[in-house]
Image (cartoon, rainbow, N blue to C red; front, side):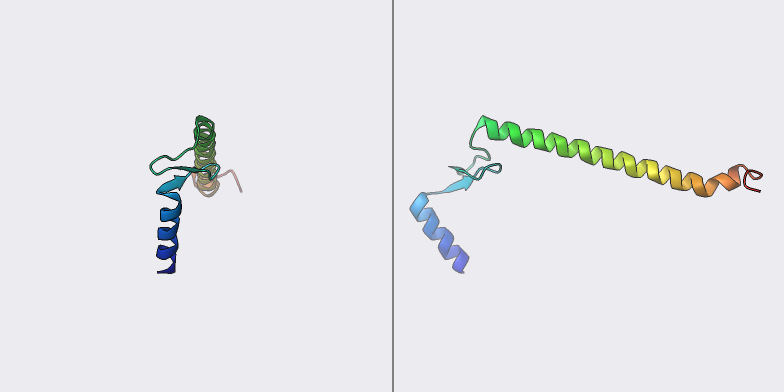
Amino acid sequence: MVLQMSKRRDDDKWGPHSHCVVCGVATPENEKYCSAVCEAKYNQEAEKYKRQQKMSYIFIGIMGVLVILMFALPYLIPGLFS
């Protein structure tokens, strides 16, 4: 209730608006970024995050294959460890 009253007062004072997702500057209500620079920064960080996520999946996959090979190798080559 207090939050709604505060938001309503802010809307009366500043008008309907949102904030830039990068720098926090007030923007018109339906815009995510205040400028093309902030939009480029956001897109660059999003691509960096996607690359890191892809590398994490690759690393987890390689580790899984190595664990499976570690347990399966004695059965695949019976005389190797005796």
